[in-house]
Length: 205
Image 1 (cartoon, one colour):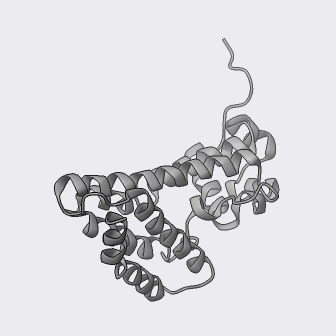
Image 2: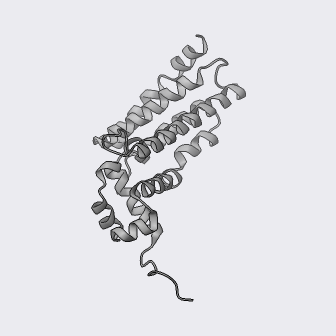
């Protein structure tokens, strides 16, 4: 039996990675269909046949980014012996990741779509979900620290997690604005200088 349609003549995985880097560089709204097809090396019918829509392509690109770009940032939360060490490594590795030569500066999940006015509501909602999951990952590590005795009992883990994720997200914006790796490292160290006061304050409210 003959196969319907023409077989794909492009590498879907490679095309997806190229799309991911374009969304990372320009955001959902800034990456036009013409930009995407040129970057991916395919035409519009092939894009729609392989991915369904720009929104579906973006969703796959974000998932690829979350799986493959600097997973060591998040691994630090589980491998470091204390919660303080985990958060410090998390921020230091962020400084490295957000300033890698040959990669867009900053973070796709932070910068890819912030407002419905310049991106689809679905794209904004997808990134909000990822950012909420990131807060949850840091909060869970802090709660593990309470259980293991290196974080004071009663610490408001939600507030502390949101503080350090706010720092990380700010580092993404600073990187996109041209901050050097050294500047990002300084921001990470500055944030960690607040650890004792922040954790102690939230534990004694």
